[in-house]
Length: 259
Image (tube, rainbow, N blue to C red; front, side):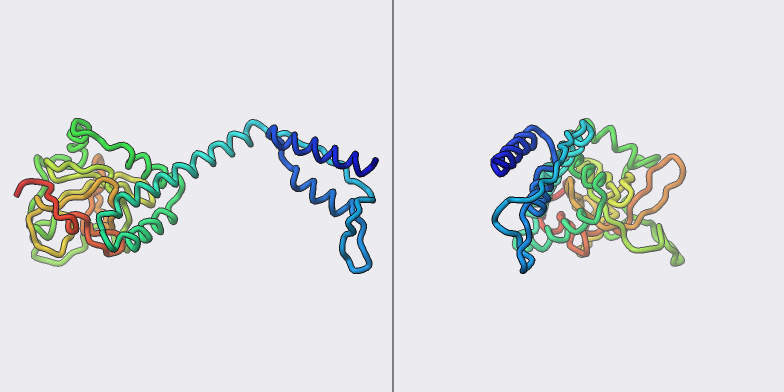
C-alpha cells in the first residue's frame, strides 16, 4: 500500500510538471535515493521500502515563465541570424564554410544585444527612399563622397601621420549601402555605434575607381575608426574583408555604380 501511495504521488507530480510546475525530476531523484535502502556494497536495493521525503511543488512565477519564453525567442532569432549569415557567405563559393566559420566566431564573441541588432538590420532591407534620407548623415557637409583615387579615401599628404585610432582593426557589419552615391553605414560590433563609410575607403587588391567598390547589406568588415568631431558620426578608413578575407565586391564582380 505504501508503494502504491508513492506511485500515486509521482503521478500527481508528473501532472503538476505538465501544468508548468518545476522540480519534479529533482524530487523524483531525492525520493529514489531516500526511499531505497542501501546494500552492504553501497548500492540501492530494488525495493522502495524506507522513509519518503515530503516535498512541496512550487509553481513558476510569471517572471520565470516570461524569462523562459524570451529565452526561446532569442534562441530562435539566433538561429535565424545564422541562416542569414549563411546567405551572405554563399558569395564565397567553395570557401563558404571557412568564411562562415569566421563570421560565426565574430558573432559568438559579440553580446546578445549586438547579435539581436545584426539580425534586425539584416531583416530590414531598407528601400531607396529610406536610404536617400540617411545619406546626409554619412556625407555630412560634403556634397558627394570623396574620390581621391581608387585605393584611398584620404587626400595626398606631404608627411606621414596616423589617421584614426591607434590599435587593432575593429569589426562591423554593413547596415545599408547606397549604390547611387557610393556610401553607406556600418555598425560597430563592440559598441553598436554608427560609422560612416564611402566607397573610396574600401580596400581592394585591384586599383579601380571607387565607383566599382561597394558593400553588401549585412557584410562583415574590419576597419579603423576616425572621429569626425562633434555633431557627426565617426567614419571608417582601411575597410577590408572580415579577418583578411576579400570584400564581396571583389568576389562577385558586380558594380555599385556605372563606370
